[in-house]
Image (tube, rainbow, N blue to C red):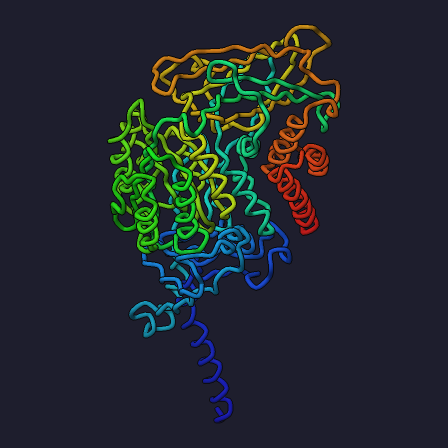
Length: 621
């Protein structure tokens, strides 16, 4: 063999050996969530088609890494999820994160490009593999599967599996109500709900140039975000307002609206309040739209409290801490100093923090004092004994039974646990809000929290009994996670919703009417307990056919706007019953019903944005 031929053979064997020697490393480096970065991080939101599958999830800790499937389905512009297992770096003074300006906080909902991807360390080969004979390396490569991806642990919602969107935010999926034949089941029963978090979360997605995940949209929370001009009751806790009109989406159908208005209690007349603010100070809360915004929100609340009210502050991160003992709301200096001392860092022992806050709150609980825990967090919980909502609620149930109520307020994106927050509020006899800006903080903490602190009724249930002679079939829009068994309507041991002073609750039904008849369409019943009562009282209201309007134009502007909001939410959550409905129709319906209200005008702009995003998404497919 010539020297040249020998050299060629040696070169060929050397190349083969080089290829084979890399096989174990290729197989042992299956990509993890830490190795993925958003594909469009450098683009503004408007430049990215929504719901595209070309981008990937941001960096996370290994314990929070998502499965391959969720990585493949990730949306563009997902925000980075900070690790809760290590202390977050202190923000620089130039960034103003510890003391953000009002402009910074007011614009917090506008988001921005994600931080640069974290560097990924190359994985060293396993010990001994580098010196294996070629045959052994090839055999090992054939039989050694890629390592399994860690699966994120989420609390299960009742009747539904949690859905994790591409940004790392977690929502519980609920099957939308379908049509029910009145002859087979004339009763529709649900608990009152005055939460608004779903609307605010969805608004943030839309403002950032993305459609909200379908599972993030709850119709009732969209509708109940807005206030309607229902007359308050002349006596008792509630007044009920009924109205119906033809559907703009289907020529043979109608929509019926049930509106419940709680009695109004003025700020000067309400009971003294003891508020325990439970603040998440874990590492992921360092960004401007989380802990800094939460601190400003508490200051807004304190400003609007009465002289007889008291405030306590408890924090939780890797451990819990008493920051401020019960302090008169008038001692603004001490309260602000305690708030300004808070910094983010550490893991999230949410369960331990909840228990400590409730122990403080129950000391003041009585029939003459409003005692409430207000938890401010991104909703994540990753260390401690009580991580799931069920575990936390089991520990605090005894305090809830003694009259302590809960307000859950969410902040931030990237690891927001909407499913956990919603469940805590539902089971903790309280409400759930989401704050994305200083403007929203003022609305929640100035109007919805301090203005309606006093609970006027608890375990509030609604039951609509449809008349088969007038209504062939019906469906309730929303309230899926507030369903109550028909048989439990008069079972006073079954928990339901709480209504505060001045709250109103709105529900809409889509119905197929029977032939012309003068009989009532339905009977609406409201059953509730007094704030400190154990037995409920019940009121009944007939829904007369005369309360149907001949056309949408003749219906009240409140009715038309409520229908526009409910329809938009039903479309965004991709309800099968709304297939064929148009956001353009909902937009037109809302245009003539804003009545100069700023929140309604903002909704109209959001519908326009949603139409553009859905159109772009359709073109992208």
